[in-house]
Image (cartoon, rainbow, N blue to C red; front, top):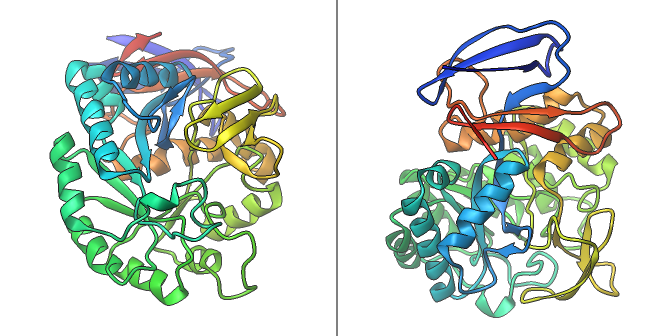
Amino acid sequence: MTRITGRDPATGRSLAVTVGDGRIAAIDPGPAGEAAWLSAGLVDLQVNGFAGIDLNGGDLQPDAVARLAAVLRANGVTTFLPTLITASEASITAALAAIAAARAADPLVAHAIPAVHVEGPHISPEDGPRGAHPRDQVRPPDLAEFERWQAACGGLVGLVTLSPHDEAAPDYIRTLAARGVHVAIGHTDASPAQIAAAVEAGAVLSTHLGNGIAATLPRHPNPIWSQLAEDRLTASFIADGHHLPAEVFKAMLRAKGPDRAVLVSDAAALGGLPPGLYDQPIGGRVELTADGRLGVAGTPFLAGAARPLKQDVALAIEMAGISLADALRLATLNPGRFLGGRGVLAVGAPADLICFRWAPGERDLAIDTVLVLGEERP
């Protein structure tokens, strides 16, 4: 049995968590004077890369996937979905195979990666909603292609982001949902009727709502209003201080409520690297600034996200005026619901836990200890 102590973010009281056989066995009052906070490990549904590791750069190798899992774990993320963006089918299937191989080689990696998120290639081809995805690889939904994805990775694809503007989308969504695959709406210029049809077919998420959309929209209706108003959609948000202004994030969070909102990092390979100019296979010449903004060099346009999820949690507190406990919920319990119940601090749950230091006004969680399945990991 292992015992870990820390303060409950919801109450401030000290907790002592006992773990055994990889799960939480008991939660009791902890010692007085505890300084660190204790939480379930962070859950990130959208990671494109980090610390120089690029899942979408081509020629992905299993060891790179394992290194990514390790660096994310050091940043408090105990569960994540590797995210593959719009590319050729050959590129997507090769990356899926590499992720599957990494899981097969290491049980710790397999635990960290319960599924894969494929973001595209079935998105809007238009400038604006397409974002940085390559236009020449955008294509309509194709169930035969999806089956080839699954064949390449042993059925690991568990989340697909698409735009429901295509007439084939409802049937495609219905089929994936029936197979237990979550479908998200994103990078879209779909009409309210098309969004409603997607939800009726089984779509359950909005991917980084407010981003991956046209810069100029009708006042109403538009795809943001349609998704905000749809109670059957949980929305993910990038709370990095760059993708959404604070007042926009705050208003969207209020509209969705605490149960239907999720924080994602959407981190790119340059996240965690020193500020400077970089040349990337997607986005070309980009600049990473000291405040964590990743943009196309010499332009006002973003080129991805660069902050780890732990910083987004801290920034969400500041941007939306919410509590530490509420911000953590957006990065643990809520995303964990889409992964079979990860991100829970409760008896019987997987003993994936983090101890960290944070004080009001700080823009980061300082991770002290990470437990995965009850064992401390570097």
